[in-house]
Length: 131
Picture 1 (cartoon, one colour):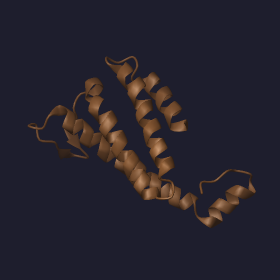
Picture 2 (cartoon, one colour; picture 1 turned 180 degrees about the horizontal axis):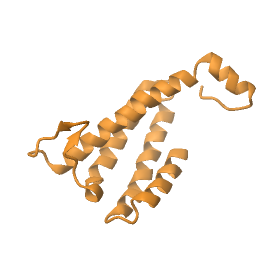
Picture 3 (cartoon, helix red, strand yellow; picture 1 turned 180 degrees about the vertical axis):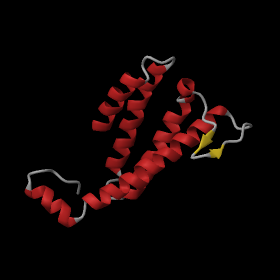
């Protein structure tokens, strides 16, 4: 629920005033809700859950974000062929960005915080940990 509420608040603040921004306020949180639920369902297979959530975010958000910001011309300085449909570039860009943020950085952070020494330290302070 946290990522859903966070996406709603962030999108309402940043994209709502823009042309077609209401699309992002509706579908961004829904994409995050689906991705969060996928991670929850695949919690025993953490990397699979992270990659699946990244793909869901990329496909859903990438399918409409070009209506707000336009199509990207490059991804991490790699030029996107101008012959590609504009929505393909958006889906590819958002999917790659999500893979980096969720499947690489997020998974690494989750792995570190799940170590027994860190988890037991958090538990001793009365904080809940990811199991």
